[in-house]
Length: 461
Image 1: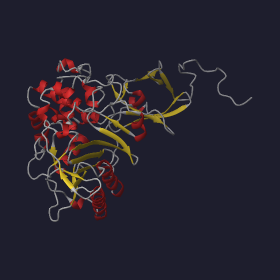
Image 2: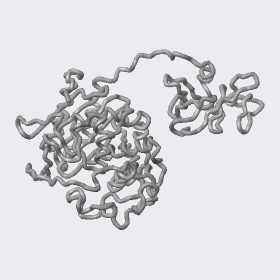
Image 3: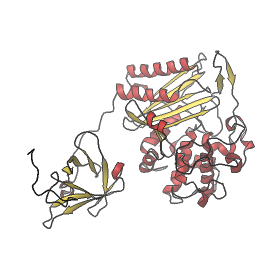
Image 4: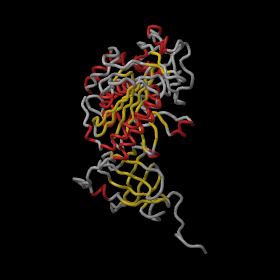
């Protein structure tokens, strides 16, 4: 994969190089590689290494650990979009006899199935997958630690179950389905379940000395869908571009957006950290921007993919050490550096090709009681409702084709917005989930719940 280095300003490129150089030096990683994506393609690649003259490029494989989970989640979403399953289906419907069948497929994707974080001992990341040949070996005798659906508890066995689900529904091995449905269509030819040269070796760095120890490279067997993959910054740059806008050959933009939407109840600590989890994607708020992606680690390797959809910038960072540099922070900083130094240039404003006068009549200022709201038409053909000042309930609404609109997000998600007209055809008010929105505060001519004092507005007497 070739990158167009000239697409970024020299000062931006130097800032990016400085950030990964600091991360490699302070994190004491044998090597660290990174890429930045903008406009759907890689625009920068950088590397730092402890070996003179052997800097890795965008084609060198590293193990990416739990970023594998995002690939598995895409496969499951494809099954949903094909109508072969529903995210609300119990696992038992499609994969009976696991002992975790009361969890839904959405629970497994969002890590809310109540499953243990790890498989029974010995530690699966440093032992052969042949020790756990069956799902029962991965789940153990008591797979559920928490009530299903009540809390977010990260679970590697949960994604092992999702991989088995893909195999059951497709009738083919997970690896084969992954290759035919994601890797080949997206051109991720340097992503594989086994290392393919050139690839980095995995190392442990002594915490109190500048000494290294090679880590074992185990085949995870049944647990492969949770963390087996090897990839490159070049391939993961392409995958990051896909996660931003989708690709109809693999998964639609709407389904990818659904993956990026919080789907799990957050722990108190997560709320404080500004972190959440979607369907196979981690979500966080950092430096005032919303970031999605996934981290990964296995003995000898660290990985991170971070994306800011609003800035149209993504970063991939890979290192070949068990611990050391905080790659999530590094990737977020790479996104921030580009977004702040070279902010996204918006598309030119253009008027709508057609304006529906019936919809245009709804636009403007409305009042819910004494709270002032604005209802706007968007370029996408939606209605957007939000407070005129300050914070408050916001939502976009999609037309149902019959004069009503359905909320897409926030407090009003799924709620019906219905314009109510007078006998002469003029709009009297908006009914939104029983809330009455009027053109004037407490309009006496509208059916305000509880009525309006007949003496009207007054001053202090």
